[in-house]
Image (cartoon, rainbow, N blue to C red; front, top):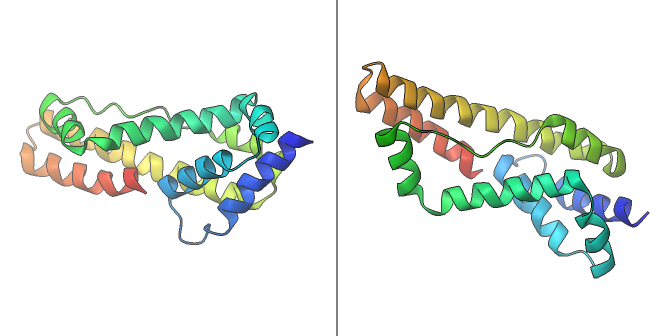
Length: 150
């Protein structure tokens, strides 16, 4: 019961911003919603493995984006565009049954935006190695960065 309430509070925080939100905003709102729970609700939510996966993904992405220069160097110079593991759609489906249909709008947007960013980073790495030159790789990287930030 408390877990359902906690997840629905998070879902309500997300539903207000679903129209213009992107992946980053959805994860941030989900994390903020988890922080604002009461102690009892946090204890119940903390035991939920699916909710923890979302929190871990949010923390990893935040850490990655803290130093954009280091990320740029990894992608464009070292050629290693490893991004954090995405939260699977199945995880969001498991959370949805306690939160309602509005929750899935954010999950779909998250999946699409993350896939776009991952593909663009991969293209940046590959184009650098295939003789595409630094300009091509830089353009792919610069297109991926806004998707990672949102």
